[in-house]
Length: 367
Image 1: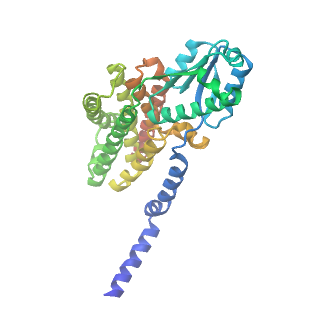
Image 2: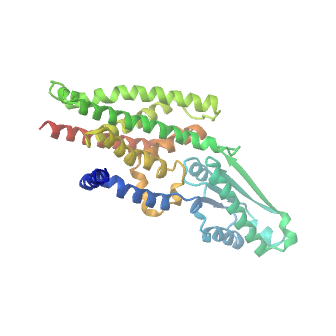
Image 3: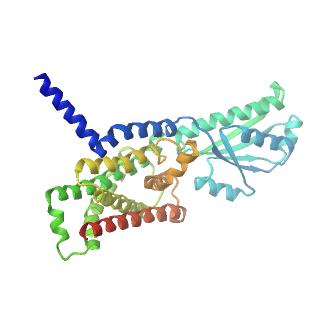
């Protein structure tokens, strides 16, 4: 009995070592996930983009800005127009706006009452809270270095929080979660469905019909697109009615951009189906190429600007990154389509590349 069990164990080891996919799952995936989590999963907030409008230009105001810039937490961007500064805040180019009023340096030197204005993007409540704390700490250090203790009360620190005034984390999390849920449906469903047809032999029959490869691709994409769009409307209603997440954008723009994202994800799912002949293989590839990157590298949970530079470039290859930006802006800021042209074009490029890759592989299979 023991000899038979040992022989069976030996057989399983030999079979596993000969199977590249099994070795990949056993050896590569754990190491890959560890590396990704170690570098991407960080709750430290660094390199927060701060837009500065210095209307004073005096020595102390320049020193204050330099003090912020010398901190590892902030990355300073100078502006000379309040309109440009407001647009940058609205389009996610800066997270904090600092306006230093005229006569700031002179009033400090003369021990007169003065103030500083800050506007904070509250979309990501966690980042906003930490940014506020870091900002105020640096500001207080500057004042203590330049003023007697008894004069500190004369300095006003005025702040305004935009887009998520209540600082609710759900307002930021749920729009991102919608993108993750839609990706699960739109990538795995077509990938597993087509591979299942391969296993049953029905897909081969379909290839022998006069229907072109393009028509087959369209026929596979459209039904899942409709299902995905219905799911998108359902989760939208749950988010706005049940969780009471504010929606400030255009619903038609939401439907349009969601359709483009679904097309991208479905195209990826179809491409994945051409890479493997088993359901398990399809699910594994889908997890590695869509779910894992979407959760870790899309900005869904962890701010992209806090990741190592190499990983920041890798995030541009994650379609969910672009859709999450669109969704969070539509819900909390209500920008128009012009604010999302880069993201929309990127998603369309991904869709074309995935569909072209699927068509090429299907063509090779028939040759």
